[in-house]
Amino acid sequence: MMASHSRVDSERQTIEAMIALACRDWHGTKNGLCADCQELFDYSCFRLAKCPYKEEKPTCEKCPIHCYRPDQRRLIREVMRYAGPRILLEHPILAVKHMIASRRPVPPPRSKRPKRPGAQASPASAN
Ligand code: SF4
Ligand SMILES: [Zn+2]
Picture: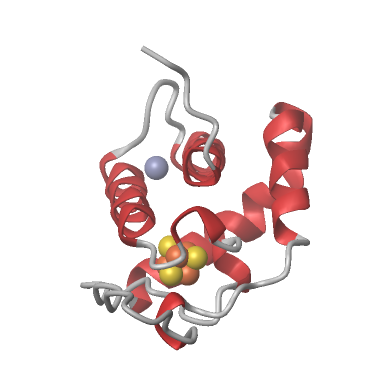
């Protein structure tokens, strides 16, 4: 199978590493994730898969849409606040990639872009 290096895959890896770091330190998990953190990770993957920006996506913390449910948004923010500064030591490559991604300009949502003649409307994102 060919390895994927897409922006979405890279963000999925970063989120997984950050949640795993927080889960280990907060919940004492030695391997994998506890049930709550697994739920947060699964939800994040679901949102990533539905992201209307696709491969042009900004980092979620800079996103003007922020598609997360309020409870999951609060949780992921807590994880990011805790794991963000610590991940540099444990996963320097992921941390640098995330830093570079967070400096990219945020593109306008696809639904707000001028339509090309003959182009189909983009499908709306579902919650
Ligand atoms: S928060 Fe924004 S960038 Fe992140 S998945 Fe949702 S729509 Fe995409
Ligand atoms: Zn946990």
